Amino acid sequence: MRSISVFGATGSIGEQTFDLVMRAGGPQAYRTVALTAGRNIARLAEMARALRAEIAVCADEADLPALRAALAGSTVEAAAGAGAIADAADRPANWVMSAIVGAAGLVPGLRALRHGSTLALANKESLVTAGPLLMATAASHGARILPVDSEHSAIFQALNAEDIASVERIILTASGGALRDWPMEALAAATVKEALAHPNWAMGQRITIDSASMFNKALEVIETREFFGVEPDQIEVILHPESLIHSMVGFRDGAIMAHMGAPDMRHSIGYALNWPLRAELPVARLDLAQVATLTFRAPDLSRYPALRLCRDVMAVRGLSGAAFNAAKEIALDHFLAGGIGFMDMAGVVEGTLDDLCGQLSLGNALPTLEDVVHTDHLARIRADENAHRIGRNR
Image 1 (cartoon, helix red, strand yellow):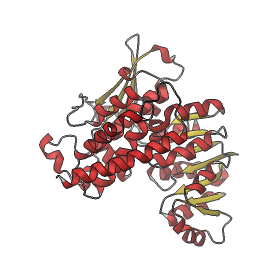
Image 2 (cartoon, one colour):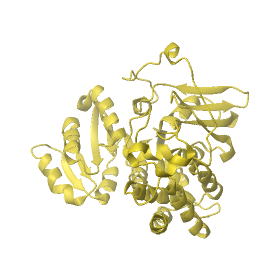
Image 3 (cartoon, one colour):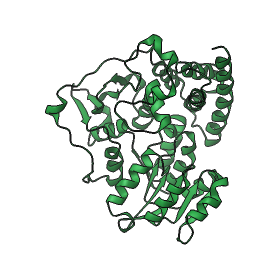
């Protein structure tokens, strides 16, 4: 029986993974090793009982008594804290879903790869902050990384049996998020509620805001460079409001392979879960006659400065991805708390990159985990300072 673990089980990706696993037979089809979550203790315990997991781990040690109480009478072990989450990744599993949001997902992913696991990677921040380290770890331990982001899953599928040397360009599609059609002058006053009203996708709070600011797409541009090994000038971003084409690959003979499907993350999750096979999935089938029209337009970089900043990050490489992601997370925290405006987030990130520019380049050296953690820490401090300064000057 195949063994699985899910890190970030109660988030949007984790819930959809749970749905697919249960539809496939749950504990009769898979042996669940570990489930981890943040503060949703009741749901974590419910999932762990349903899948008969070996261990359930919550992020905050203060929640451990509640988790133990919720699991009382079951065979599921309970643990808590960042260390316990990392230790859970040391429990070997054939397939590991990495769906923890943010830089916190890096260490569990690295630990799982060291056991030769197949890592289904929904945590794009791992590749952004430490792409060379993650890929080298997978290679040295005979592990495999399968992309779960809808865009990168689409690229992965379009490249099936293709030679990467024949790729001319990779085109990432972007919905543009909730504020896509707002007049430019109105964006500065956009509220959290308004930025959360995504027209196509049902996602978590942070990724939905990142979609509206296009920071999510900026991370995906960097992720594409790290995962597929293409050059930055081969990566394009195009707005596609319908969100039906998830990405495209253009080849040197002029052909373009496009991956289409309903905007449902269970497609890319299910593809990673069942790879190299394709299983029947509970996703809507496209009626192309009903769709009728697909539209595209170039993104305005003045509206989406994150797309400009990610190019700077790819030019420097080294530790710049770690600084970029950390600053983005802090800027988002301040926007959610009402301390800065929607368009101020890019200013926080750019200011942080400028502050740390002399410390980010490593040349051709491979960053260590310690390097990444240290840079993440410094960038969060600088970003917090920059956000407070911008907030005071509003």
